[in-house]
Every structure is written in structure tokens, then in C-alpha cells.
Length: 127
Image (cartoon, rainbow, N blue to C red; front, side, top):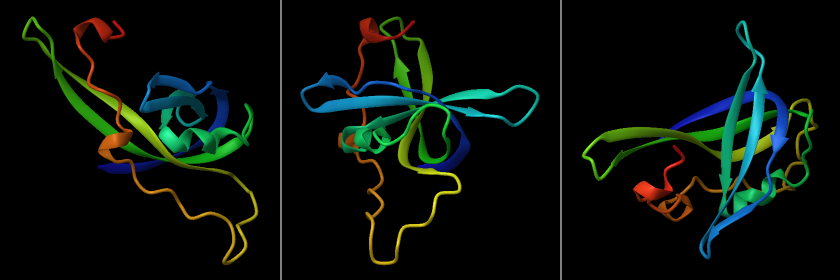
């Protein structure tokens, strides 16, 4: 699984959604200013990582480390589509003082299969 870091300002922080009894998610939109036009990039935090967004608010400059996830889905009509998502693993303020040695929190573990959203059937697709 590839890992990327996105730096920019927080445009929006969604509310935690309980998708099922065992799965919850929360979306963060980062505005990344490079290039001719700013890019608004959605990053999904899941399970216990949803709480990582609690101390942040729109407008703050942050660095978000996330995993790139891709998956394949074949509909009942036999057409195969591919989906790409970014799973948030860590978020920190840009310019924030580093955590004191021996203090703070350990980085959360990388996402596991249990962190992934449940398989969707054709009726659940967003399009």
C-alpha cells in the first residue's frame, strides 16, 4: 500500500458517520494549493482514527499522511470499475511544536482489513 503526505489547509471536516455497527468514517477535505488551481482532496479517516480530527478546525494548515487504496468492482452487468481512496493515518499542524521526547502519543498503526469499508453491492454505488 502506497503512502503519501498532503500539505494544505483544512477546507472542511465532516461529522463521524456510523456506516454499520462495526464501521465508522469521517471525511476531511484538504485544499492543496500547488499548480494553477487549488486541489480539494478528500481524505477518509476510519474507526478510531476519526477522533484524530477532533482538535482541528477549517482554515488550519496541516500535513496529512495517508494510504492510497485502490479496488476493483464488477457490476451485475459485467462492467468492471476501479475506485481510488485516501485513508488518513496521521494529521499534524504545520509549524506546531514537536511533541516532547517520551511524551505524546504513538502513531496509530496502518489501516487493516477491519478498517476498510464493507463491500458494496450495485445498489450502494454513489453514481
